[in-house]
Length: 96
Image (tube, rainbow, N blue to C red):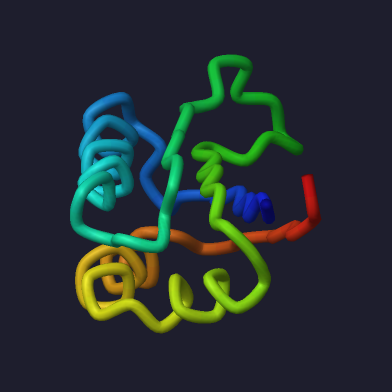
């Protein structure tokens, strides 16, 4: 199993925008077949070094991660939205 984590800093980190972003991320459940698990959480501390949203996805293996990265729903809905609202992101991928 491979875990893919991305932290996003949003241009607008209002509760409403964080909820909308979380809902869009969670919409991958059932729409992105290679994603075995999709979780997201919003930061509650809001310190200067905090990121606003975290995405955690588990896939079967490295090949499935590549498929996930190129999945049409992931690219056309989630990545598109994140590209519009995020000003910074960092990622980490590792085997479980």
